[in-house]
Amino acid sequence: MDFDNPAYRLLTLLEEGKRLDQNLNCRQAWSKLLNVRPESPELFVRIGKVMELPSLTVSAIRFTYPDEPDTWSHWVSQVQAGFNGQVLNQTWSTFINMIDHHSINYLKIHSRLLQVKSKLKPLDEDVLNGAKTGLTEVLDLLLASEDIDKEIRVALSRNIRKLINAIEEYKLTGSAGIFDSIEVLFGHAYFDPKYAQVIKESTLGEKVAQIVGVLADSMTIALGLPQATESAKALLAYVEAAT
Image (cartoon, rainbow, N blue to C red; front, side, top):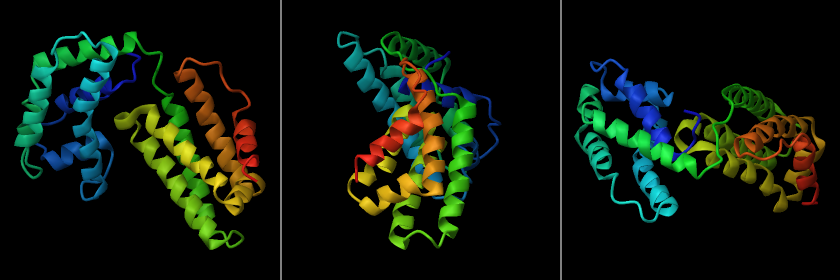
């Protein structure tokens, strides 16, 4: 299914979880599903975002279909029971066995219902991986640079990390998380002329604009809009307005 909505994101995670070895402990299983090291504190952050998906789905259904009866109660209760019953150092079965066949089927129905009223499609995986790789390289160069003011390096590196993190969490937060991070990355220029100058005039700033431009083009396609072939230039023009 070529969908991007909270029901489908939760469905995808649960279906992937069904294919994991139930003898894994929950910490190992979640680390595989969420692409984060088992010992990383980020694991708990991402599990928390998974726990938000049921409420986000119900809110989306209520908003999109205000007359829809309470058809989500079964799968919501099963997912909640899974979270309440799991123990991170015990077997994955303590969570995933609570997700029954009916829950999967109801989630499939809800993901389809939400997609009917939405033009949003998934972002291209190759574009996401390319953006993450490019931004990681820029971040390494930025941290090693002595030509950029320390305060600007701190601010810019923080905002680049946020975008990298949003890309890594795409399967949890969808395109909204990436869109918000791009706004922060370039919107910071409105409040800091020195920051804007680095984005606008430095080699690193140009690389960031090129990478985000490709990502922006992919997002316009996912949103069902005409492709923004001049995305990088448009982003630079946006920063230009800040000075």
